[in-house]
Length: 457
Image (cartoon, rainbow, N blue to C red):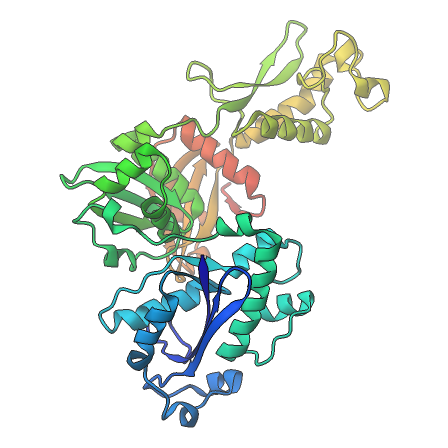
């Protein structure tokens, strides 16, 4: 396998309006650089002063340089059968694709990001910017913010990465979408317009039947994964049926999770049913034993049971969380089914348990602490808003919780908080609360302790 290690300099600004001023390509055979191509490019627009100061490339230098269409053929030829490699590949690959698109050519190559690969192969560095990373590794970077210097330093970094972990590195190669797998009516170019933001997406077949619903904090990336590299039989079959894609931005990850859950229940798309597995098969439950002590335990989630206090993806996650809660609230590990014994728990023997396990601490005293935890896990029956990112910079997302249950979701103008919280309900739409919604809500709050909560009186 060959690799085209590429760096570009541009006029800056938004990607769609940015033009290339310099490009460098180093061809790597997996061991060393075997070919190179470096040239200035006439962007056909003025270069902004701050870019001139950053790169040193000015209008005079590129005046007689070839325009992009004049170097396009060379770029295609030298990168044929190569993996496109760059430090922060999304930028370089995206700009080059846009340049080719302006010429009416669909340029696509499998690609690899040395930022992501470096985090995996050589973890623990303070920074993975090209300048700081190469310096910490002792790699010379001569000509920072010039395509040739940055690309050569990236090539040296790539050599180091591939020597350390050839097999692991190959997992970071992003294959391009295979048109042969896709439905003939699916517009591949339209996929380029999908933003890489939080939202919910929907796949339809040629008869306009909704066949799959998904969510992600990066919907473009997740949709690309569906279309590129499904490895299961059902995933590949779904690829061939996708004729249309719709999406809704949510801004908030929590709203994306809630909307996906509600939409799947409402529409029950065939591939959500076919691929369905319980995301949270274990739950934390409470009960009162024959001696009057409140007990906690981990069990498999069943539709016939009451909703769990908390839900978990794995039993290990459940046990670890319960142990932290037991320690925080000074509960007995025996009464929480963590320490199996017919006598006292070990913590009692080392004086870290008050003795509920051997009836030395009364049920009334012990239950005060345990009930406090249960109430917290049930959100204390309180009413509050969860304030999060909106779909755009000028708004915020709102999730309304009333008496511990999901009540509504919506969006408000950025300065909505000048109004009193009891007036915010006009910004939200009422939604139904159910077991899955509460699971999602509790899991989000457990994993996002820094979430902004505004309580209602």
